[in-house]
Length: 196
Ligand code: ATP
Ligand code: MG
Image 1 (cartoon, rainbow, N blue to C red):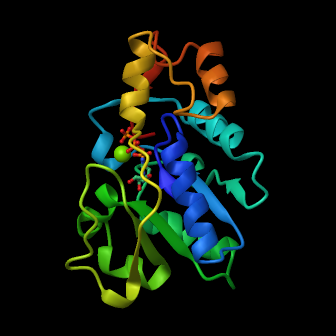
Image 2 (tube, rainbow, N blue to C red; image 1 turned 135 degrees about the vertical axis):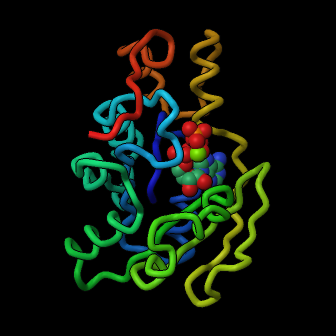
């Protein structure tokens, strides 16, 4: 499951847990992005903070892990490169890529879109406020799954912290504490999502 995870929240975690269960996956690998092509005009928290929050949020689940492939690769993050790298690391594995409804509807605009489906089976999950639709995507390459509705977004979590409102129960406790410790989202701690 790729994402900016700025910060990771319970919407991500419930979606991952549900797909793990339904598809009987051995492992769900969370892959925090490097510089995101669709977020280049936005301030994004440094990759190391996003990576560590993802580690904290997933540490207690034996089936969850976090990969550094995207944050350690220079340049813009494209999912095609993520999947190629993971394929190299796990040559025998059957790969699945988990996306929320909003991301699924964008896939055809992603780099090397037609090749994506030969590298992984895509699982599109429901997300409140977004239509889950696989129109235009190869039928055999995509499954749609209804997951418990969590009306949470990282954007909203960041806004809440900036406004002094709580994010308890929207993100895991350790992430609430990590955000407070490093004063993320409340002070100038982000850097331009620049391409290294
Ligand atoms: P932002 O508001 O910064 O874009 P976000 O909440 O959308 O953050 P991302 O890191 O952009 O989180 O999303 C990573 C992946 O998780 C995407 O595929 C997205 O669709 C999915 N996702 C995020 N939030 C939810 C949610 N509440 N329910 C289901 N899927 C979600
Ligand atoms: Mg998003």
